[in-house]
Image (cartoon, rainbow, N blue to C red; front, side):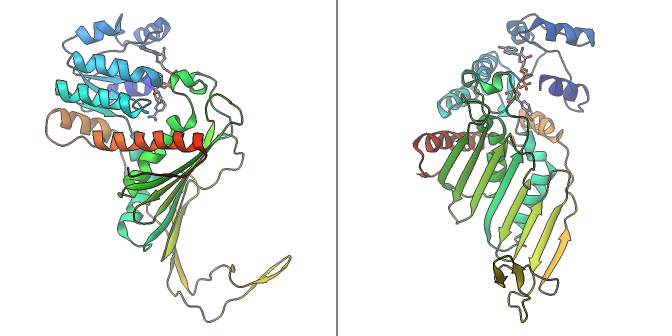
Length: 336
Ligand SMILES: NC(=O)c1ccc[n+]([C@@H]2O[C@H](COP(=O)([O-])OP(=O)(O)OC[C@H]3O[C@@H](n4cnc5c(N)ncnc54)[C@H](O)[C@@H]3O)[C@@H](O)[C@H]2O)c1
């Protein structure tokens, strides 16, 4: 991901790349071979007065010490996700940001995913009526990567990896307190950390969110599925548009039963075109560069930072509650 940020900075209209530092000298040499300055140490980056902003893209357990050190050295800091591994750690990072007056945020780049933006737009429009449930899934078929992501000491596991994105997205869609958390982990290819999970969040207004990450799914389930009292929306996968079916006539005069092996059903017979209307939503416009644009404007005091400390803490509190729920095998009553 460091490579992504480097490339991003090189193409950016708001930042200039000063250089990179990686603990592995081979990465530094690779950067140099591409004409990018490689600092000899982290301290050398901090000592460079021309550096205003630092992006940390190391394994997860390093984010906290590096971020605090950088903030204390007077740098603004973007941490990769997950921002850190516990709420206590995050509070220390936030305290350092407040103490030093330097910006501190986390790279929740999936707030710019068009599938998420389509779901959020539809939710906000109220077109589906009261939302009963939202399901958000990411399904892979290659297990968990065999690097540090498979090791607990580095903050591995899919809840920290993909979970943090999906929880952040759902909390951006449903802007209500989370009142219940139930999580179950999968250990199909890795016993040390979760290589998949199923998480159910209850929101104060009654909406239920179901978040699922799997790494042995050879047939993926839909990316998003949202049900409201007046309609249903589905995004099959992130390349597909959002398909919406609206119920135009709740009462049907004629329902044609469906023949199943064991008999007929009217209750579960699909709706016809007379009582529903369907369409594909236009794909929302999105530019992930807006994350850095916002960070720079926030540093300049022109606008508030989009990924703020309150939402960062709420997401991590849900992560912590998910770990507790999985450990206890229970639904937790919370207020987050
Ligand atoms: N936002 C996203 O879409 C996204 C995508 C992928 C990864 N990430 C996040 O980015 C971070 C890095 O993930 P990755 O896939 O690039 O991992 P990676 O293992 O490919 O790269 C990590 C790099 O950090 C270096 N490193 C380790 N400790 C260091 C230290 N103390 N100081 C300097 N460099 C150090 C390693 O040598 C390595 O080059 C993780 O937090 C991950 O969750 C975010």
